[in-house]
Image (cartoon, rainbow over all chains, first blue to last red):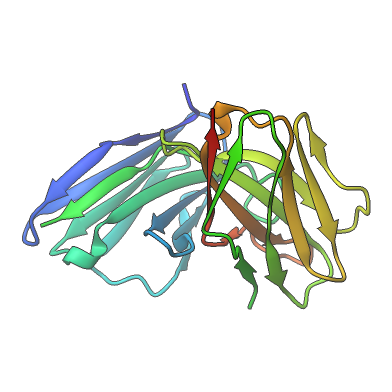
Length: 115
Length: 117
């Protein structure tokens, strides 16, 4: 039990498909995050949620649509993606939204391939 | 804006030897946290060690220690007695603290460490 669970582990989708990534945390944390990890690039913060309210959207294209129904669950809905969107998508959670210096707990990510 | 730089894309070390991974950062903040995360082939990022900028003493966690040089904005990770299980990508990360700063981690590009038997 990692504390943060992401499904699916791998996903291959066509550019016209609609799919969703799921993240669930069992730690009682208040904040959740989506990151995009591409080779040879720093992790890119996409979205931040605090008590299920979105607090940050880092200029992410609208083909990525996050949803946070409660503090334990976070989704990333995908539609009409491009091949350059292929990457590892990491979900993370933290106990506090305002900086407490405890860092994040990460899931194992979803490896997304857009064909 | 804060940036984190890891200048070593790949490194290799023999089992039981010591290796040092480099990290520099740029910030105008005085209060912040620094982290090293490990990402093994399982892909889950694991916190290795953290340092609070106001503490002069370098953090240590078993075989892992840091050399924190605040004036030089340098934060290197030393792994002693390297083990095969240390093979992973290592990420240096920065987080502001205080003054309503949000919990945003800013990462470097990572260093891929291979421990050779």
